[in-house]
Length: 185
Image 1 (cartoon, rainbow, N blue to C red):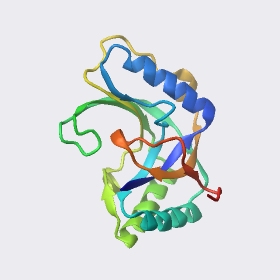
Image 2 (cartoon, rainbow, N blue to C red):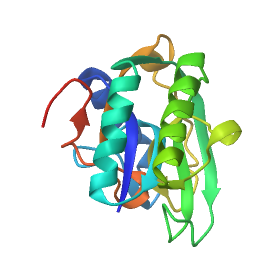
Image 3 (cartoon, rainbow, N blue to C red):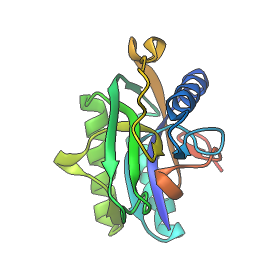
């Protein structure tokens, strides 16, 4: 099983991001779009491990990191995904919002990466110097042809991301029943 240490925007931003993603996906033969069952988030790290190791990893991460971090959305990106990709085996076109590389987010990534390496977890994705924080909105078959307007209410000011943990699903998504830093479950 794979798990992730992530940052989840506050409810109002989730609602706005979900609407924006649905608008972008209209007419694109979407394969995946964030929504009620796939919460928008910024990944700090994904790793494959047994549930017991995942619990230890989360305990260490939630003690070492701030419960909230500022996220500044930097722009919209589309990128081709080849068939056979481990997040999206069927391939397609990724679309999402890039997040500015702040010292706090880079430091948090490096902390959870070091913890995962220390525990011998199977690390997924671009890490270390290749880490590029982003907020995946969806995967479609084609890039939309219609003009796109960025959501000014989200792009103009930082949004707060709350530290969370959960089991990874298809397309790098997470269900809404996450564990949050500072909450015992």
